[in-house]
Length: 335
Image 1 (cartoon, helix red, strand yellow):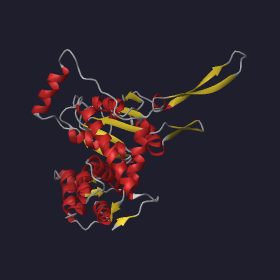
Image 2 (image 1 turned 90 degrees about the horizontal axis):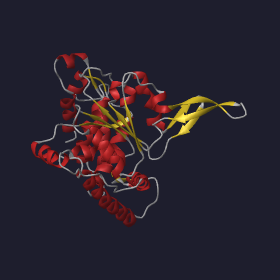
Image 3 (image 1 turned 45 degrees about the vertical axis):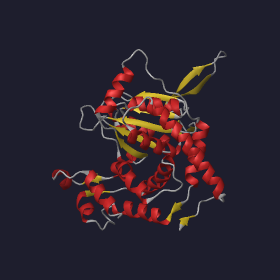
Image 4 (image 1 turned 135 degrees about the vertical axis):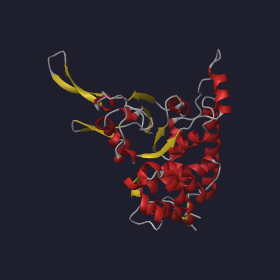
């Protein structure tokens, strides 16, 4: 059994469109692979997030290519990109923009809004957790509603609009934890690991010679918008829907039947996690060249979708329990 999609569609045409998108995404992955070495899972999860229409939080120590990945994505996907370096003295107007008082030639004065860097298609929030919570929260409305309100005026953001934020591990000096409300706006939290030896060798050879490879465009913003709309039209099986609901509801201490979850979690994911899994599972299937998502897609995406939407309680942290272990028990419950 499958869930009916909102619009009437020709199955043969849908299959052809999905196949065409899969071929285009293969070219996108190849273009990214010429610049980013040995981080295929990170690249795929980031692409899945963008295809789902969401924002991604890249977490890892400095020097692992997080900034390079975002710059490469902007070029490959044909998006207008801007970068903001988050620092402790950064203020909300430095991101959103501000009004200035101008005087015309005839002496009349009026306020004019000068747009900030958030008015772009791909905003790179570099080291987002080095700014104060007040500045971090300036992105909340932009991320959720794709618009900003300044001095009573509402300004829409360009389409598509994605925030790709990088974050240093919270135990490093000079960092501020992101508030839970903002973390929930990120569709995925992607951990960026150290590259393996073969990838690091390839990177050394490619980036320290006389010529360094440059990213090439493989998609346009209009094609990306069409791809995001197509992702939402892909039918989802009843078993996949059930697995998403079971996984997310089992991650809440109030409704779970899993003892390790009830004992170790302070709070669990809300409905945004279910929505994120539904979209991301579809995007992952298309990225892999399949026409429909499976329960395996849900299990594979569980950790990056749920990790930043859950919190261990005090006793679990004292006992050295890890969120990854709790999420593993949730995946196991899917069967």
